[in-house]
Image 1 (tube, rainbow, N blue to C red):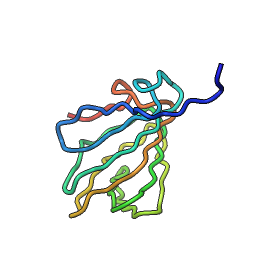
Image 2 (image 1 turned 90 degrees about the vertical axis):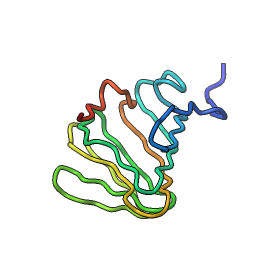
Image 3 (image 1 turned 180 degrees about the vertical axis):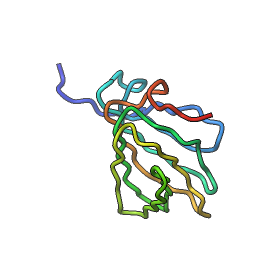
Image 4 (image 1 turned 45 degrees about the vertical axis):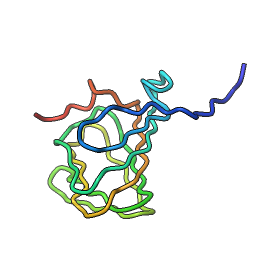
Amino acid sequence: MKKYLVQKNPFVVPTSDGKLIEEHHGLIATHNKDISIAHMIAPPKWSEPFQTPQFDEYTYIIHGKKQFIIEDEVVILEAGQSIKIEKNTRVQYSNPFDEPCEYIAICKPAFSIEKVNREA
């Protein structure tokens, strides 16, 4: 039995907002409930509703910029920067800029739609 897994075929999450989400490890891709790791590209002018996830989320920006509204504070990250947002924190993710934002997101425990608590 191998003690490693090389992920060559991440699960591409279907989206309707132009955002690319490739889950490399997590509930869907590898049935891992402890952690999820996803490669993402948010198109220019993209945003999603506020949410209050029941998981810690780490984001590392590879290219471009990404905006976070955390509680009432606006934080903008650029390439080479990262952030940890603790679970049960109200946050909105967006890319209000003119270029795509490429980043890695890590959720612990793994991302699930039932635990993200997106606002309507």
